[in-house]
Image (cartoon, rainbow, N blue to C red; front, side, top):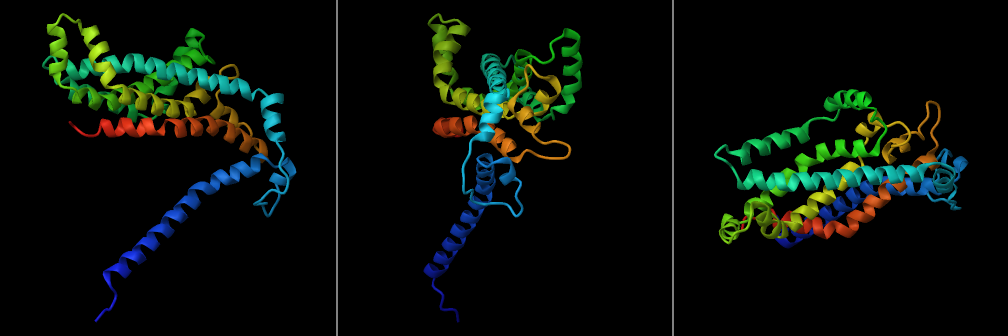
Length: 283
């Protein structure tokens, strides 16, 4: 007969769970530690085998090389411009579109059919649209443009914004909008003064997620840009050559690429959580 008490079993399971979480955190954080340490090493030190785990000396030569001597700051600006265009255009088109889809069904079940349509667009791999976009932009002479790249990003963030904010608008009782219209408000006034203030958490969360996705996008930027509009993800891969890899500069480039998003996410994570939780429960 076993003498193990339920309390002992629970304590053992807690320890196993804690150990598992610690190992998972170690696995997740190790690449970040590796990149950070490589970025503050000299070129020769970063190539050492066996690798140096804790650098004895710290240098910012890699950051100076790519930011001051190189054109990496221009790539930061390009990424920021394209990302902001995508987020702003996506919100300006997506939020009103969601409002119309949810509130004015016209007897066509738009909420279901168009919702699935927008989601299916988001599920398409970028390579499906790359060749048509490339041919169109080449014919228009619009290749290598941050503006046009941002508009392409907006097309692919639009379905995400529609899908994400759909539940927020659907949770608002129709009686609020109907009461405003009875008092003489137009459809636009009803949307702007009644619905928009109530879905601000969802709009904020959708904007943050869209920003992160477009900032990290690589494939469209690789095909549709050359030098003038090159973004950070594309520029970072250029440190990988055919015969060698500039580990310290590559690591510094990765840090510069992920640092703004990491800081942005840390600052805004409570808004994301608030937006997700407020839209998750039907009140």
